Image (cartoon, rainbow, N blue to C red):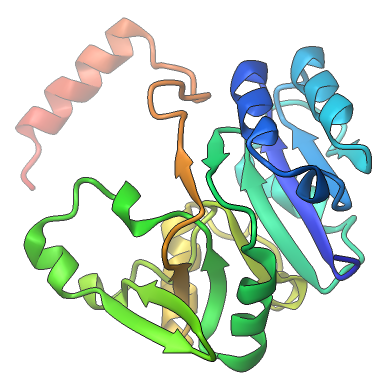
Length: 232
C-alpha cells in the first residue's frame, strides 16, 4: 500500500474513533496515516497514535478552522498518488476494499472517488430512489452510482473513499467551496460521479454524535420562526 495514504478527520469523539480504528485489520491500521484534529483534544490524538503505528497528526496550527481548510492542510502533506479519506465515526465490516477501489479509479476516468459506504446505509431512500440506482461491474468489481437520483449531487462525498490526490490539486483545494454539495456540483458539471462498492464495506456509527455546536436556544427559536414564515 505504498501508493496510498490514510487521511482522517478526527476530534472530540475519541470513543468513536477507537471503535472505527478497531474495526480495521492490523494491515490497514499500518497504512501510512495522517490525521487532522480540528478540535485539538488530546484524547482523540492519543487514540490515533496508539492504534496507527505509522500515524502522524498534522493540521493548520489553529483550532476550529473548518472541515475544508483542515482537509486541505492534511492533503498538502500527502506524497502518495491515492488518498483513502476517512472520518472518526465509521465501522468497517470487511477489509479488502483498497485494491478494487484503486482499480476502478485506474480504468474508469468518470469516477471522482470510490466510496466504501454501503448503499444499504441510506435508509431514507424510497423504493423509487433505489430503482434509479445504476448497478455496474468492471473487471469483476461491482459498484453503484447514484447520479440518476439528482442532477447535481453524488459527484463527491467526504464519506470514506479512495480518490486521486491529483483531483484535489485540480480542484484547487476544498476551501474555495462552501459546502460538500458545491464540490459535488462542480464535479458533476465535469461529468464525474462517485462509485459505491458493492457490497459496502463500512457503515456510519456517529448519527447521534455530531461535532457541530448547537445554536443558542434564542437563535434557534428565531431561526425556526423565520423558516416557518419564509416561502419555500
